[in-house]
Length: 374
Image (cartoon, rainbow, N blue to C red; front, side, top):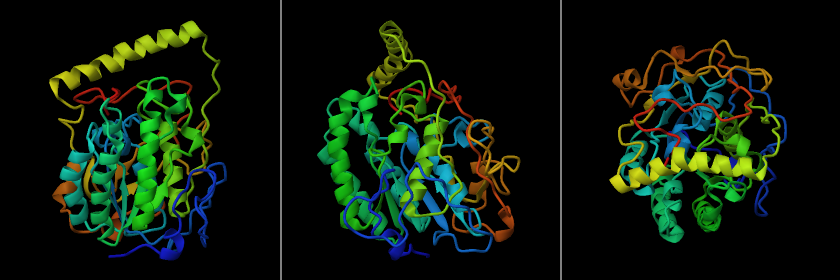
């Protein structure tokens, strides 16, 4: 199994859009979120050391808030974007996404951890605990302890493990109250990453997504612009070349007080009340949802999209699996075998989400993904 290059990532403890935390030097430092992306390497050039990427988590990693009717589960997301970029110039790269919306950390570990290890990845992203933290009785210390036990098992495989911190919710009227709990959890995550040599993608310090225009109507999930920015954050944390340009939402007129309160009431009726109903019924929005890519597959971008298309004019496009139409077809091919080089397109292109002035419509799902439960 291919392992990561310690000179590139062992000292890269954080990429938060402003630089590296700590005093360690790094041979190839990540770029800031405001910088232009490095050009994609030519085919055949070793862009990075990873060949099999597995993503674990909840709705954030599944891609809820970033609708794509042609993708499994009807969503795309930051992890798909990362996989598409890592596949550029790499003829044997494969990607699995085990994340399911609504999952608390214990179910993520119980349902996804063994499967992820079984797939023998050399790159893993692990985002968990967000749904636990928004519960009134959340214990950030206990959640972090469970998170670290899972990290220990992932690191033991020799894979590069990326830890994603929680977002600073100071800007969010709906989730500002959990800010201190998230901050405590993030302190644990950074310490865990330091103890185990993980890469940190620091969303708390990623200022570009601390903007309501980067979020869907439910105020909990990122919209396509936000997912795009997180993909850039993760790739920069890894020090991986990519073609993703910074995204900026269109400016909007500041809301008057009455308008803001009206929107708060609509949000509560549309998203909070259904969430409370599910809590009372002890059901989750992900109960009838399966992982979008349970087995490693080669992702390619829409052949009609241009990697360099301006964010304001590029169409959303659709991701597809080379040689397969759905995740079920990929599963039939077997989980152990890597895709053959011939199954991977010669020059995939990143698809830029269209610029938005309002949040996108949510994809159809057994339960509305745009609810404050994930």
